[in-house]
Length: 366
Length: 227
Image (cartoon, rainbow over all chains, first blue to last red; front, side, top):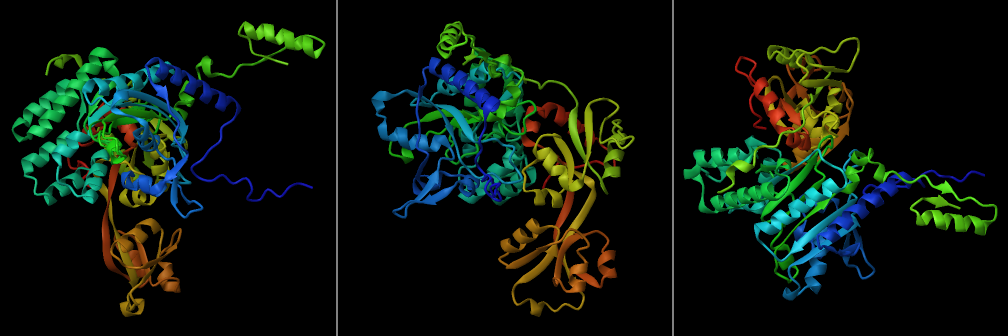
């Protein structure tokens, strides 16, 4: 009698399995990236799969707050499943690190679990690989993680990409006194280049018209250092000192990246202001040709560790390797081996043959 | 700043921009606009994909309500879509231009003889635009029961399914023919050039050139979105 499978094979939103060729490719990509991260001096960390929701409630974006999976443990405490490795890592590392350990470089490769809309399963955000550089707060640290992201993409053969570098600090300097709901609305308007909403909020804040013009143009800017220099010169009289400082920092970082790495792949993009409430300074995202959303995101979060009692700056990124798998389809390195059969009539004979051939690098099954 | 000259804008690889065109009432307006900008295109022999004559834009003909899905998934990087369809999709897009054509109104309507006192503080509304209707009234603190319909929404009050409808109203002649009247205009609906946010970022220079071309000075000049 056939088993009754009705309803038994449903898959909940926010999880996935992958198998055989796909799993092989994923494991190889992850291994290649982890080897690279180790060579850059980053040590692995594992975070718990779930933790107390209250530890993170104030640090979640509105969208993440809607999408995290929550459960109640036997004592009645509300838990959440790991939806963002950075958050869990800040608490864990904050508990074990001391100032003598700094600077600390850590890396991770972990599943994350969060709800995805049933009509929108394209994001493939189930697995994060990333790094954190804990301790330094200078632009050399910012540059290090962006260069490492570039190396990560190069390592797995991704060359049609751009990294867009912006600044949450510049946004915070331009709008210092916003309440939380207005800040959320304004950040969303900047990201979606919604000039109408930005202008409305500026009007509500009684921003003078010439300064509103500056802010609209500034937070829509994508381009080169030279183009940003021209824009800042045009509005020089309208900038505050804090804004000037942040723009200099972004320009200095871009120049440093240009000198030290592949500057052709880096763009200054002041509409990049960071998606997370905990972002504080430089922020960036990587965009790959043909993909419908960014494949990597990162930035500085200098106050996140302080929330968990160890007040130290940090910068990092996470890359969604699952999104990039299709882009590596033509790379033979990530194609699963086609194992040869061991030869010999007796089982032990085949074992010996397989051992010898495997030692030469062949893939051999018994 | 030193080292100013070392960082030039990195350009995306070249190739046609991908552009979803909705079937239906906006289709002719879009073709006319592109033709006026020397980028004419036509879908021949029931084909659903075609390039403009300059080869700079690849057009894809899709159902109006499906257009946000194609752009969200990056199959088409750009598209033309009204606020009504965008809102229902729930996806986020960059709005690059607002077109002067295709504008309409989203209205609450009821039978001419409907007495609001019968509502007892809550609304029952039949509509195709369930997400919009629910959010609109909830944001006003008005409890609402929403009944989803696929079309011919005007029938709902006539047949007694719901006292109110939320629907697009252009001339109002369909309402009049069914003895209905607009109770309130809820919002204006405009038509926008939209972009998948990641697509815009990767191709921003080419997209901006297209936007500038479409915004060229004449009577059909679209405006930068002030949505």
